[in-house]
Image (cartoon, rainbow over all chains, first blue to last red):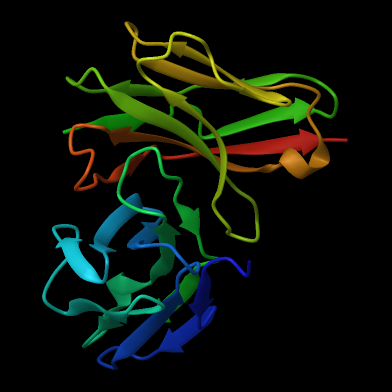
Length: 115
Length: 118
């Protein structure tokens, strides 16, 4: 299996621009998670989906952030407009389901730099 | 809310030696999972080991083992026979089983950077 695929691996953009991060979960996994990693806040969960439906988006920092999962094999995290404080590594993870016993498999992350 | 604390920002060990990474957590719940994740320079988050709170026996995975002290809310990771490839950032994480079917978030500690010296 190819594992969780994220694109791009690196993104550099200017403040005010729209940024779209992409994720392809492992085939057969029904749950998908978006995390953000920063030096100040560590690793934090932004939002997660089950069967393409958002379950908990309480970690999304503000309205500039939105996430979608139009089908079982694709999800996007969009930031519009982007700000320098959004600079971070964004991880996508997937699991078979929401049961706590199911392992979450992480993608390689997207390093976002907003100048 | 649950919190996870790793009090050692950095640790180092000689190759082939043993090192223990510390983790404490705070929760009012009795049923949960604890995890150790490894993040090498490639940034990939890799699950190293996990422990179910209701199991008294400490989990082991080859050279990796944990010391789970539920009453003390302590969950340390022991790496035996350290190898150069073990060098990475290690994160301790907590996940509640309270919402078993609707899911619950992983709460991570701040991480411990492990250096393995040849």
